[in-house]
Amino acid sequence: MANEVGCIEGELSKTIVLPISSVQPNFQMYFNDDPSLDKAIIRSIEVVPSTTLGKVAKNGVYYDPLYLDLAGGILVIQNNKNELLATLGLWTLIRSENKGKATFTYFKDIDWSSSYVYFPNVGTITTSNAVVLRVYYDYNFNSK
Image (cartoon, rainbow, N blue to C red; front, top):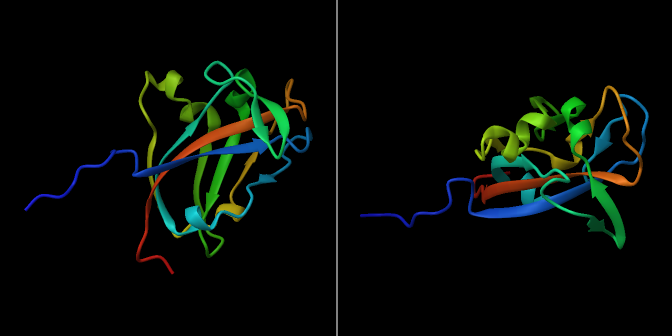
C-alpha cells in the first residue's frame, strides 16, 4: 500500500500580510483570526522580504514588505491555551537567507489570533511597511 506524496512543506499554503500598525518599540501586532490555521498543523513558516516581493495589498491598501529591519523582528506563536509555542526571529525565516531552505515547524492547536510580531527596535520601519509570511500547513482532522 502506498499513500499519495504531497509537498513536504504542507499540502496547503497561504500568504499573510501583517501591516505595521505602530512604530513603537515592542508593540505587539496580532494576526487576524484565521480558523483554517487554528485547525491546522503548520509545517513551515517563511518570511517574504521586499527583495522577493514588491508591494502587497491588504484591504485595498498597498504596503512595502520589510527587508533589513526584519533582522530585529520576532514572531511569537501561541496555542489555543495561550501557551507559548515558539519565539522565532523573522530573519531566520527568510528562505533566501537560509540558502533556499525552508524553516520547518510542527505547530498544531494554535490560536493564530493570539500569535503576533514585534520589533524591539523599530529602525526605519513605517506604517507603510508590512511583514509578509507564507504559511504552509496541513489540515489537522483531530483538532478540537
